[in-house]
Length: 242
Ligand SMILES: [Zn+2]
Image 1 (tube, rainbow, N blue to C red):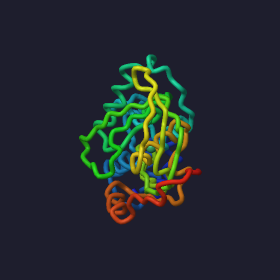
Image 2: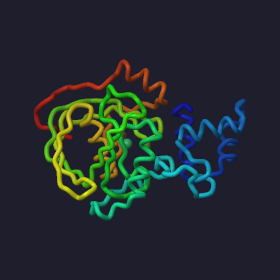
Image 3: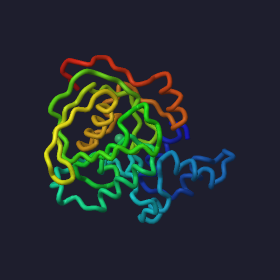
C-alpha cells in the first residue's frame, strides 16, 4: 500500500473503525475486492485481523505496532529483577524472533514493559532467517558510545517507515543475564546499530523520532534501496553525541 493511502487510513484504524467501513471509504472508485484490500491492509499495518475485530490475538505473541499501539510503545520500560522474568516472556521473545525476519526485538514490542532486549542477528552479512544468536540483555545501560554511523533502519513496530538514523560505531554496555549476573560487553559496527535501536525502544523512542530522513518502503523495496544505500561508517572513534 502506498504511503499516502496508508497515512490516510491510519487514523481510522486507531479509532478501530470496521474494516468494511474503511474499505468503502477508501475504495469508492477502485477495482479492488474487499478481500484484496483487507489483505493489503493487514500486510501494510502488520494487523492481526482477529485481534482488530475481537480484541483477541490469533498470533501469539502479538507484535505491537504504531498502527494500534503507539501509546504503549511510547512508554518507558521498567528495570526488572531477572528472577522475576517468566519463562513465558522469554518464550514469547524467542517465538517471535524465530518466525520473523528481524535483527532484534525489545520486549515492549510484544507487550512486555520490561527492560529486556533480544538480539537475534547483529551481523549485516548474515541474512539467513534461521540464524539466531539468542543474546538476552536485561537492564542494559550504555557506559560508553563512540564513533558515528548511518543506516536506513526498519522496525517491526513501525510499518513501512524506513528511517535514516545516526548511531554510534561502538557501544559499551553493562547488563544482566537471565541468571542475574552482571556483565559488560562491547558492540561494534552494525551490532552497535542494532543494539542502539533496541535501547531506544526501552525508553519509548522510535527510529522516526531521530531520523535524518524518512521513506516509506515495503520489504522488497527496502532490500533494493539498501543495496545502494547501505550501512555507512563515518567515524570509528571520538565521543558519540546524540
Ligand atoms: Zn524497532
